[in-house]
Image (cartoon, rainbow, N blue to C red; front, side, top):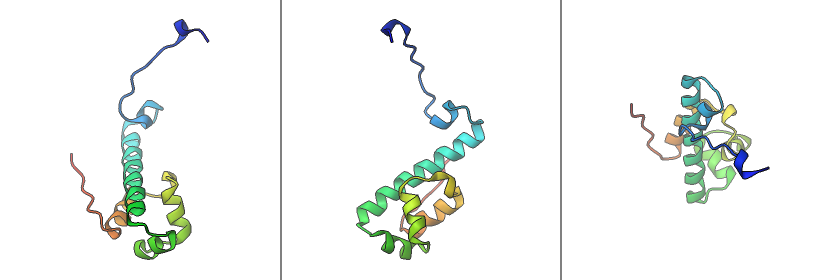
Length: 95
C-alpha cells in the first residue's frame, strides 16, 4: 500500500456510531461498554476471584466471566447498573 492512498477519518468519539449503528442504539452500546470496563477494573482492584464476584454480584460465575470478557450483548444497561451497585460502585447518569 502506498502512503499516498491512505485516508484518515477522524472518529466521532463513539465507535458504535462510527460503525454505522443508529445514534440511539450506538449511545446505549457505548454506555454498556463503559460500565463493563469500569466493572472489570473494579473487580480486579478488589482482587475478587470470579467465584467471589459471583457471590457478591448475585450472578453465576460464568456470567462474571462474560462480564470480564466484555460480552456486551449478554447484559442490558439496566443489569449492568444493578451489578455496579451490588459491587459497591455508585453509577449515575448525567444528561
